[in-house]
Length: 219
Image (cartoon, rainbow, N blue to C red):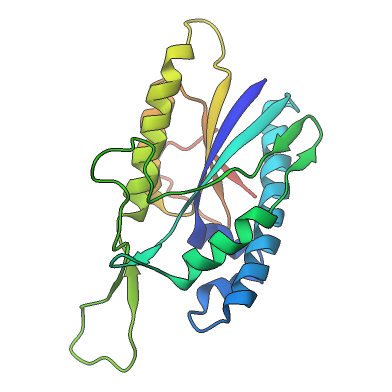
């Protein structure tokens, strides 16, 4: 059995469907966001399983956890996106394809795996302070990519006790994200012995100056 954890940059993942427009619209009604989340995540499950089966030659696999990274709080106040996710996650069901199953145990990326005394992370969505004139409020996500990378390496560390010389690990990591800031962490996890794959959603080109063979896939 291949055990897999998925680390999802929600901004990237939501682009997998036209329904992602409701996710990106801050004024979209809460119910519209909940409906979009369910539809997008089901499509993400399908395409992730298809690609995983392709990579592993249809090896028997279980995606056990899906950790979602996003700007979940302004200060300590949950955003509309976080509330919509909390409402929608119980409605998401397991999906099976071939020998693989995607069990939607949803976890939020600001609640770091390490469970340290400074966790959870708050204030991950902040008003943009740049520019002199503002006609509308703009917000930026903070600490999202580094939270994902930190969790990936923490997961790799905990799984490393099962890594054996001259034998293939029985656990793996999938990152769903289009940002190159995620690459160094993936390279470290791979170097430590964790089979690691980055699934691109909307990005259609890569830097020719970075060694990416075998680690980058498109869904």
